[in-house]
Length: 387
Ligand SMILES: Cc1cc2nc3c(=O)[nH]c(=O)nc-3n(C[C@H](O)[C@H](O)[C@H](O)COP(=O)(O)OP(=O)(O)OC[C@H]3O[C@@H](n4cnc5c(N)ncnc54)[C@H](O)[C@@H]3O)c2cc1C
Image (cartoon, rainbow, N blue to C red):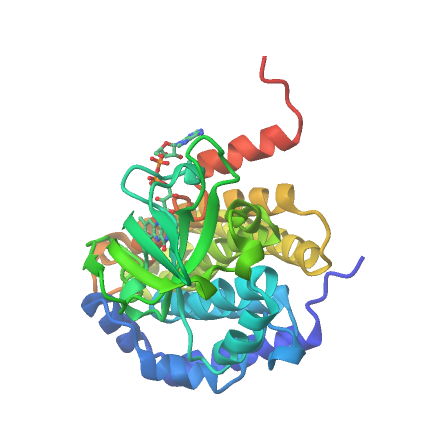
């Protein structure tokens, strides 16, 4: 058994840390959060480091599928700002990973090199006004009309639709009663006539702002069906394929980055802040909290390493990825809230980053399959009798 982080991953971690310090100072991260903006120029500089090819095979211009390395990039960027880490996911994972797993050969040859070049971001258009966890019930429809598809319906909480090149939309393409066999995934450019986008004001994950999207007789080429003609009515297979395992880890990696930052800021703060003539880090109340936070972080890190390793080996890992997503997102939320307690009033003030970590951390157990859904899956896969 080897718990050593592979050398190439440590190098990537160091590279991203240097990038964050040079290009993503704390002031800038606060500004992106406050103004809810995506710093495209910073993303373009990140692309120049070659990190958008980490999920893509070499034959399409990438550096070869490397799940553990991808998670490290997400974690390190998320320590500073989700306004960069989430668009990184929208490119490298939502586009790169999904196209690599589900697209037709023609689509891969056309789009994957553009993902590597940082030219393509995907927004996930899955959730709808009446459809949350029960994704197989989506009501947005796509109907064939010759060489085109006509799309009608609406998507909710479609993050980054306004900054993305395609909405990776889950749509109903078959009879309503053929559940799981009546869905396809279609690429819809947000600039297409009939697409309208309005912002949703959420408490966190600023930058890749989330939106309501409606489709009114939107026409796209039938060639935009993911998987080509073979992908028609196979959308559910694509969603529950191994891409879903990695998607759970992407959210967990964000939570891990936020928790690491919350711990580091608390560690710094307790040494600088003095009350009653002593640093607040000398009091048992803060020392014990820091011990629990550090222990929890360690467990999160080990779970992430193990689950990412399983995914990389293409081993079955739905149970491990669900446990990892559940544990890191809930532990990360607690670590951020503990950091806020340690910083006292300053943890509640917007001048301190802990306030943002709390807002962002609260989201992680909700998205990418809620904590309750992960618990359902974990017990189902352990074959616990339901009666
Ligand atoms: C900031 C933000 C960004 C988002 N970005 C995207 C995005 O880019 N693309 C996208 O498609 N979606 C996105 N979402 C939507 C997100 O994925 C959904 O919120 C999530 O799927 C859960 O759906 P819901 O909130 O409608 O909850 P619901 O499914 O309505 O559930 C409500 C509550 O009931 C619980 N529940 C539901 N079903 C069960 C069950 N079977 N067993 C036990 N408990 C259950 C849930 O855990 C939850 O607590 C985003 C959401 C937010 C807030």
